[in-house]
Every structure is written in structure tokens, then in C-alpha cells.
Amino acid sequence: MRIDVLTVFPEMFGPVLAAGIVGKAIRNSIADVRVHDLRDFTHDRHRSTDDSPFGGGPGMVMLPGPLFEAVRSLEAGLNAAIVALTPQGRPFGQRTAERLAGLEHVVLICGRYEGIDERVIEGLATEEISTGDYVVSGGEIPAMLIVDALVRLLPGALGHSDEALADDSHTSGLLQHPQYTRPADFEGFAVPEVLLSGNHAAIARWRRQEALRRTLERHPDMLAEAELSAEDIRILRALGWQPPTPVPEPQE
Ligand code: 9D3
Image 1 (cartoon, rainbow, N blue to C red):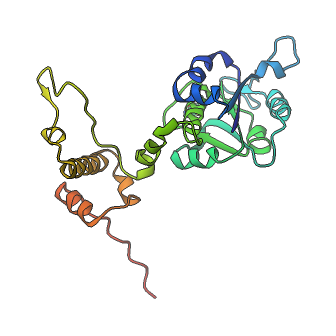
Image 2: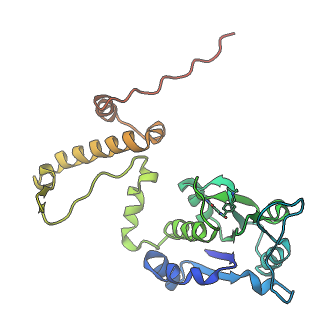
Image 3: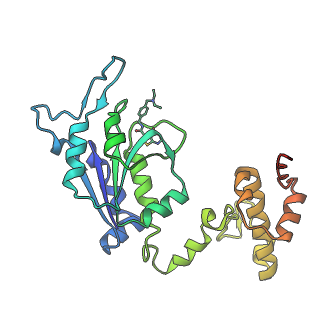
């Protein structure tokens, strides 16, 4: 897959695109990630990418000109997603990652300043995405996050630990159970006995219970979509969970 990133801070991306799974996928030509400096698509002496807002107000707004010219230069096909990264966008999640990872081409427009001229959102971008409910200074770190989430989904990107894919919490529907490695006792903190027992059925039951416990405590809304066995529901009830009661349909 190809990913183009449009930004006024291209220098932020180097080490992120070189390291780990993403770096390896790029070196192996599984992903072709290109970072473009928006200033290369300006024509004025100051290479301006922003200007003050019509109607007044604080801060600056990203100019439409350099963004339209940059996207046009990419010759994106009809199946490409042109994504504007803004705090007002639809929330990014694993489902969005899976959909975008299935495309041939994704363009990520990094917002900066107070925002992006709305004509870019309406007339150039195909969608507008936020990575979450917090404020960061621009779309660059959100873009890095999205590149990472997409690239690791591409066939071959995880090597033969592709099996870890099926195991990912947001695919399996539960948060992951706690993990431990050596030593069995670290400064007086012991690893749960069951994990040292060699009893594989007991280990599997313990891990499932801990995954259910964490999901209930930290992300209970995930339980509505998870595939739960009768045994899972028994465990959850013992942890204080009430199965969601169906909302009654209005009667005629
Ligand atoms: C005063 C209103 N603010 C909007 C919530 C102004 C503002 C804050 C931060 C305007 C732009 C930004 C820069 N952030 C992004 O461009 C951004 C972002 C984010 O801040 N949070 C989560 N996802 C994203 S994607 C792009």
C-alpha cells in the first residue's frame, strides 16, 4: 500500500518510519510511505501555508492552495482515501484502521494552526479523522499513529508473528491478559503460581478470566461486542457484571 503524508514538519517523521515493524515493512516494500513538505507547494516569497481567518479571531488557518496542489501532484486514484486529520474528525479506531489498510492508497493531511480551510474538508478530503479526545498541537503525531496502525495490518508486516494479529485485543474483542517473564520472583513480586504450574488448561482459564476482568474494569463497552461463552458470562457475573438488559420495543 502507498501512504502519502502532507505536513509542514516533514522532519518529524524520519525515526518513526525507520523503527520497528513500520521500518521493516517499508524496507521490505510492503508499504511505500512518502512524506511531503507542504512548503514545496507554495509560490509566494515567504512560502506561506497559513493565513488569518476571514471573520476575525485568534490564530491562523491552513491555506487551501498548497493542500490542493499537493494532493493533485499525487495523482490519487478514485479508490484513494484523502484523510484530513483534525480534532473535529470522526474518531479513529481499529475498524477505521482495517478499512483504510484495505485500500491501495491513503493520503494523510496533517492539520496545524487553528485549523484547515473548510473548502479542503469539503472539496478535497474524502473523510475527516481525529485520533481521540485530547488536544495535540497538530496532525503529525496522529498521522504517525495511523501509519503504524495501518502498516502493521498489511499482509507480511508482522512476519510469522502474524498469528499475533488474531490475538490483538481489538480483534478478539477483549483486552489482553497480564503477561510475565523471568524472574519468577522480582524483588519480592511473584508471578501468579498458575503460570508456573504447567497445567495448560488452568493457564488458559486464568488468562481468560483476567482478560474478562480487565475488559470489565477498563473498557466495559467492549463486552457488548465480544463473543462470550456461557462460562465467560458466569465469570463476569462473579465479577459483578450485569448482562445488558434488552430495551423493550414500543408496543402497538
Ligand atoms: C480551540 C479549539 N481547538 C480545537 C479543539 C483548536 C485546535 C487545537 C488543536 C485546533 C487544532 C489543533 C491541532 N490538532 C490537530 O490538528 C489534530 C488532532 C488533535 O488535536 N487531537 C486528536 N486528533 C487530532 S488529528 C489532528
